[in-house]
Length: 127
Image (cartoon, rainbow, N blue to C red; front, side, top):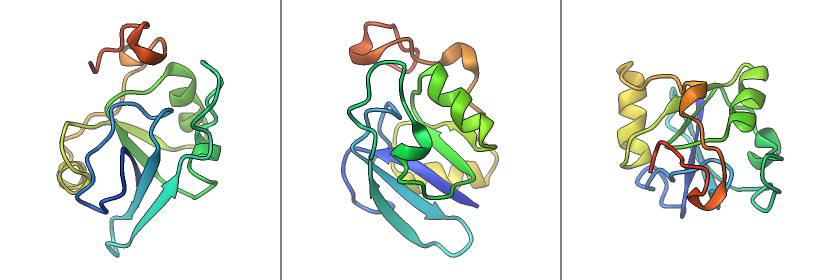
């Protein structure tokens, strides 16, 4: 399984998982089976509110899942429409979250916990 993690800066598996999908500067894509790690700059970081294109943000890279602290409803729906599972990550590194997902300990992101706006004016539940 290929899993994307939004991060502030590329430190490979030791990168800290970023709190919001759409505004993350970079994504770390980990191949769960091979351990391969790829950093991809967010290709959609300057999108207007409610206009996130999550597949474009990932540079078109194929992924099976995303692990994130927060995400907007539109981005969540668009990822789900592409059969990409979205898991609610915990504060910590990509490596720590990867171990939790392997152990089945990260829940799928529920629609009612999505962010309502940028810069926290929407009252994101992950802050």
